[in-house]
Length: 227
Image (cartoon, rainbow, N blue to C red; front, top):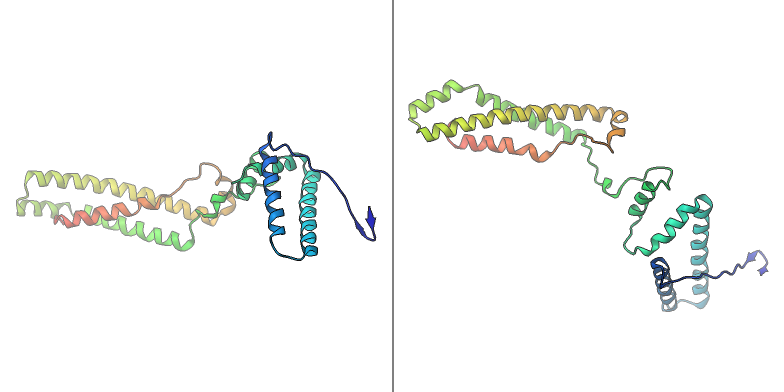
């Protein structure tokens, strides 16, 4: 039926709540919305207009999805049965199923793992300071030996000192490796077009938690009174 420039289209929606979780949740949502409108206290004409707008938006959105990609429309329709599904999760799922032409950033990518220029500079300073301290300690073996002889350090303390020197050598090597990784990371920041394809692959990561321990260990060594 039509009146003036407004056309009315009637259609029936057949649902099987006992057989489909999507149908069951659809009925639940529609009933809740209907209840909310009735209990809103709004004017009857306003309620009717809001109801018509709701049905129009829902139907036209589904129709447009069906026109663009029937399989995509079906997948989205069935997903209503998963109550706690979020939009980012649904988008990722559609990408995996190759139902979207472009990749949608994952929800976890909101936490950007790229380092800013300031963070890279701070990391560089930490590495350089740590390497300098390690090399300074390693460059004074004769002075340390004289200290051991002068103070009559026990065999147990000498063994501990030997262990500490091996730890220093290991930390020095680790710091140099981390410094090399940092330099590579800084270079990658200057060439985003080259790095971009590897973000979804086995991109090399730098763990900031590995930076602090070497410096802390050197502080503990100095507190031993050896240096």
